[in-house]
Image (cartoon, rainbow over all chains, first blue to last red; front, side, top):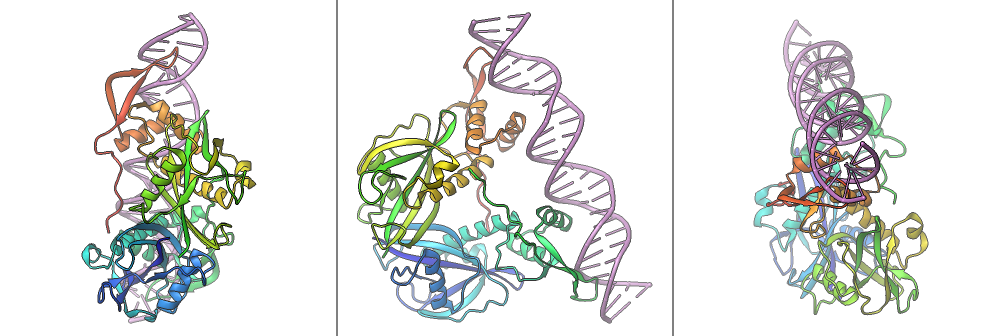
Length: 222
Length: 222
DNA sequence: TCAATAGTGTCTTTGAGACATTATAGA
DNA sequence: TCTATAATGTCTCAAAGACACTATTGA
């Protein structure tokens, strides 16, 4: 049976940029290189694969991850020097701004790093650059379709806040009329009556929360 | 390390219905039940996960699968009675009408079965109904976006043929003007000059092949 | 000429983008 | 009053759907 791991692509928006959480490797192989936090699937400890991802997150980051999304699974000979044949299930999570993990087991340091072509070019250990790329594609598809990763959203937020976050993730400007129209059409939001948010010398914004029944369309039935 | 398998969701259009290829189990557990063909990942034989899927297909079906698409990975305790903890990577493939596999190793019989809510309800072994459902959702997304699984398409075909297949897969009628307009916009097809296909007492259809450069848009760059 | 399907023309509807306008706060 | 951002009105444009019409075959 292959050496089986989960790898975590923890994404967040910091300083108005989409960033990924990287771990400085403390052990061979690739000591001193930056890699995704990850760990081995423990069939004695984990009930499900997603539990593996959460346990690994607890060990490495001392945090639970909201809204885990399975991105892909890679498996091949000589992917990872620790084993002749390694399989990794990749999970992504978009975490809120306040998410500040502590470096845990086997990790010399943690660092948020802005996504860029150069950063993904050649710096990361193993095949992790490719995993990050795919995770971002998956996240962008979700955000473009207004299927926001729940659990990432704070309980209460304003439309401009949601739009700025979307713009950062998608890497392009959005039109506010269109954005509001689409939100309206999906009946995704519910205004918190009478509650406004002030953020400067200008008109305050209406505060919303997710609508009951979550508004997310289910998959097609057969 | 978990007991690691690949499961194959082989889909085809037969008798104008979307069907899935099921295998009658010859061994415990679930003898006599229908299940997806699948097999164990062999790190001594397989270079990559996709190679595992092709080897399993060769062993079980005596056929190679075109256009393998990874659908999802499931892993949990007590998913599969053969092992305390089982992980399965699910691959889907849409095969051409002429694809007629032979029952191979560990398989008493193979059968094409039309997709239906009842069929997916309770008949299949293990958690395979859920895997089929997800594979179909993935396939439908591809076809709805006109990202046809290549390799499934015969070298030459007509627009009405392509549209009928799409309708069968999506389970709904399509508008032919819209369908042609979208194909045109994607520059997906190339007419085979002067070649027509006759299929009855009516106007013959223009024969097409896939355009050079395949027309499929690449993923976003970071 | 008729039936059947391939292929096109075109009107309507819908959703997205662009851009102007109004609303509401603090300075 | 001025500036900044929230929120809305509305024009335009593009894609999709609806439906009629023409084209081409065999019977």
